[in-house]
Image (cartoon, rainbow, N blue to C red; front, top):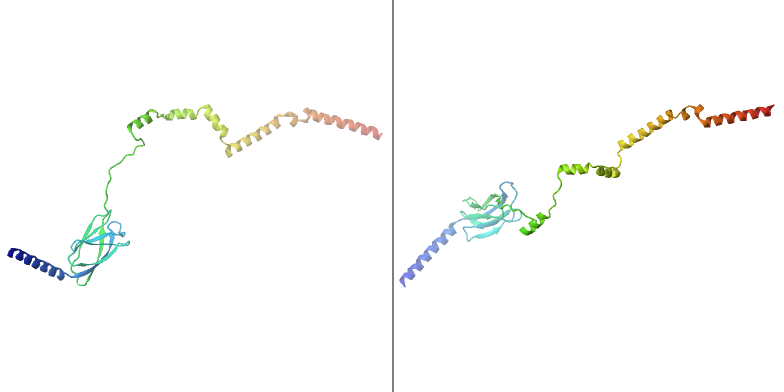
Length: 214
């Protein structure tokens, strides 16, 4: 019975000393803003945990700002998805507040390479491979494109360019002028039957007019 009483006395004494030591620690209003260490952009909704006081946790707002009461010497843990955790120990300050700019580094995780296949099984791949149609090489494709049939089909549907139309018009005009020079019936009226008919008609009409004048 005496041993149990002694144990209780020791526990009470230790608890009293601990509480008195905790009461001696100065309360501080701990505030700050959390930024990305690489881009200096605010990190929102970070979990802020006081490891020295019952793991008391608060959350930063959407602008990365936090503020809560802690003690001098407390260890504060900052955690967020996609970032490495950061720790801050509140130092002794002359005032009853402490402000800090907390920087967190982004955590880069490399995922293993994944190669997707459009076939659900090996049997489906074998069927697709056996029914595969091999395309022609460049030489065969060029021969098909330059065949008379392909060129005729393209010529039937391809419209003429402005340069081709101008060249065709100039050629037709040149041919028309050449034909006029070569056609002697147009160049020399002596060889034209229409000109001789006109000439004979004019003579006969002239003779009739002379007879009437007599």
